[in-house]
Every structure is written in C-alpha cells, then in structure tokens.
Image (cartoon, rainbow, N blue to C red; front, side):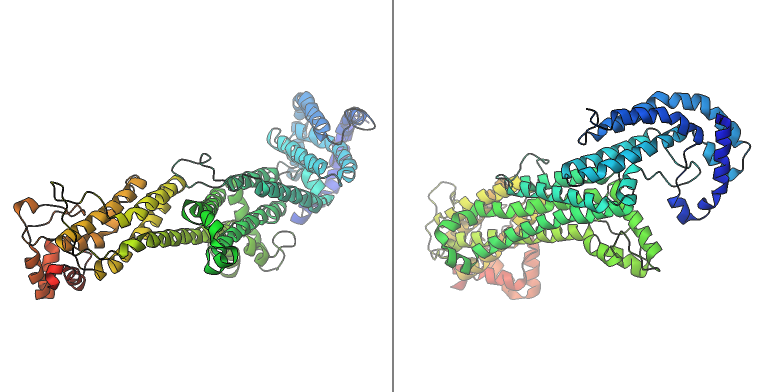
Length: 601
C-alpha cells in the first residue's frame, strides 16, 4: 500500500470516528490514532528500541529509565527535520481539501511523528511499573524521569494531540498514574519518603539550633530545623509541579506538604507547652528548680522561646511567599472553578475529597465561596496552616514578654525595698548630680541589657520594639506603684531616683542600638520625675535643666507648683501644659507632688 493510500485510509477512519469528538467528555478520552504511513516508518525505530531496551542488555536497566527516554528524545531530534521538510507540505495540501473539522489532523507533522513513537513507550512503561512497584526509590525515580520527559515534549517540541483544541497534552505520566492506576501507590511512596526525611531533620543533633546566617541580618532568625523543613517542602513542590492533573497536585499539597506543616507545628507547640509546664510552680516542685532554672531562665529560657517564635515566623512568611507563587495561584484559581462547577452536583472537588475536606486543610474561604459565592481572589491555599503558625508566633511572643516582665520585676524587688529616699545625703561631686545608680539597681542593669541584646540579635526590629515596649511599660508601672507612690522623697532622693530611671533607659537604648526611644515609652514616669524634681528655690542655673527626660523646665519652684496644682483642676491643667506634661491627670500630678517630703510636711 502506497503512502498516499495509507493517508487516505487514515482520513476515512477519522471520518468514521468523528462522532467521538462531538461531546466534551468523549474528547477528553479520545486519543489520535497513529497515521498509518508513520506506523510503517516507525517500525524500524521500534525494533531498534526493543533491541536496546529489552532482555539482558546493559542499556535495559530498571534504575535508569532515562536511558530509553533520552533515546526517544534523540530520535525526535534526529528525524524531526525530515518530517517538517518533506511530510508537512503534503499535510498542508491535504488540509485545503478536507472538512474544517478534520484540518487539525494535518497541522503538525512532527507531532504526528512523536505520536507514532508513543506506543512503544507505553508498552515499555507497562512492563516496568509492575516490576518496580515494590521498590520505592526506583518507582519515584521512574515517575520523576517520566515527568521530565513529558515536560520536554510539551515545552521544547510544543507537542499537542489537537492543535485546534484548548486542552494541553496530559502526558505519559498522566497515563501511568491515572489510566494505569499507579497514582495512589506513587503518592504513598513519596509521602513515606518525605516523612522519613522530615524525621531525619527533626532528630538531627543541631535541629534546634538557631541559624543566624540563613536570612537577612535584620530578619528574625529561625532554627535550622525550620529552614530544612522549608527546603524539604520546596523540593516536594518541584517534584509534583510538572503534573498535569489538578487532583494529583492538590493531593500532594494536602497529603504531604500540609501534613508536614501540621506535624512541625505540633512539635513547636509541644515545645512551648513543655516550657510552660517546666516553669510553672508545680513543674518546678516536681523536677526541682536547682538544675532546671539554668535552662529555663535568663537568656537560656529566652532562646528556647525564640526557637519557637523564629521557626513559626519563618514558615508563616514562607507560606505567604508560596501563596503569591504563580503555581499555587493557578492551583487556587482552579480549585475555585472546580467548586463552582461541582456545587450543584455535589461531586468531590479532587479525588474523594469534598469541599469541606479541602477547606479544613487549606482555607475556610473555600467553603465560604461555595456557600455565598464570595470573591474567588480572596483566600489562599495555606490560609489555615499559616493561621495556625501565626497563632503560635503570637503566643510565643506573649510568653517572651511575660518572662521578661517577671525577670525585671524580680530584679527590681530589692530596689522597691529602699526606704531612705527622704534622708539621702547630697552627692559630693562638684556638679551636685548623682553619677551612679543605686546599688540595688545593679541586678536589673546587668540582666536587662543582656536579655534585650540577645533578642536584638535574634529578632527583627518590629517584634523587638513590640516586646521591649511592653517590658518598659511594665517596668514603668512597677516603679510607679512600688517606688514612687510608696515613698517620700527629699530633693536629694528625687535626684537619685531620676538618675536611676535614666540609667534604665540608657541601657535599654544601648541594647537596642537606639531603636527604642525608652524615654518616650516611659513618658509617664519621666513626667512624674519632672514634677518630683522641682527645686524649692530654683536658680538661674536650674533654668532649662533636665531631670533626665530631656525636657526643658521653666524657672518654677516647688511651692508655686504646689499652689497651682492644688488650686483647681483648671489651674493644674495650665501648669501641666506649661511643663509640656501630657501623660498625667490632675489627680496623678497632685499624688506625685505629695511624694515630696517638703509638701507632706
């Protein structure tokens, strides 16, 4: 039979079976038959393929599927010019003579040649898969190589079964996983491998160490385990990114990636709960506080908490980056379209998974869009998981604040017991100012910069400022209630008190590299000290003096201030305005002045 007769036979066959492509469902199942002339032309190539890749030949190896796949790529590279130059003109002339609905058959001679090579590949694929099914590494490698082959055929050779259709070629991987039913088995293999790798990560000796060099110096530092988990998850993404099936991609995302995210979240949460249990009163009683305190308090305790905070923050940020990735955006968009199409029929969205199943593992917006037809651009695939990590980050930050506050108050306890504020001797230096803080303040002046400097090295500026601000507000409240409001002060005592607070602000500002502005945070205490340090008889030298707050004070005597503060609320407000005091009420200003021993007398 001549080549032209074979082509005519094919066109006749295609017309007889044209009904197969009249319905969309049939179109998805339909595969183009190989042109009969190309069946004959591909026969020698098939024999050569079987010679090299069957039997006991050294090229026929189960662990090297890339051998026969690259051989097929070489065949296409070698013969594509022949088909493009000699066969394509024949197809083009034929296309002008046939019905419009059949013209797709003549569109691309090279694609027709590629189609003629697929039967021997399918046969080889069908023989290999059962033999490697019980060998996870071989199966994983085979599917990975098959996806790479599909990608090259699709991207390099622009292969399409039907040039007049909007559907892309699903690939031989899809045939192996869906038509031959190997997907669930392969998914289990990949999941077992990923979970095994995850266990290796978290069980490594240095998994809990903080990595100071993997991110920008100004960013919050994660643990090495968090970095490796993220690398593992990104590797998994690259393994299933080439898949053409939406359901398969979603199953990979939910069954493997989100599962690992959930397991690591539980590990971080358990670590946080263990810390809280060990630092509780009951926990200390059971375990004994002598040996445990060293690892639970101070910088060591903060490091344990920062491991959780840094890891949660890092992975939450990575999930946000993933949500903006084109691959996951397209997956999210297709998920919304599936939900819209299946909302009336009640069919599963992906494989056996319903809308509620998918929503529980990805984003509640999935279910909301299904119920009220919300905006499909809202939400992302990692909403639920990112929310869990965000909650863990917020909780660990609040515990860090609580630990710092508890440590500061403990360090200030001795300072609150000072009872000589009204009888201190004046300083002996020529300036008449106190140059050294009270000895009882030594503990907090030692611990505070150490702890904040440690946090400054680990945390980004935003969380560092939040934490330090809450700490300073707590210190301000503690000193206000337990020192200022519980003692009376002479001029000398007030000056020493102001010097002490000034030293606290200085060590915090040094530890944060002036990123905090401690005096602005403790503005209320600074304003209180401004009133407390008013001179009985101010001199010109005192005009414009500062009590540590950095504010210029008017030439105002203690007695004049007392007179105006206690005269009326309006008079008090006028005085406070003159002193640029905005944080104190009239009642608080009166309470501060009453702390001066001269006023009380």
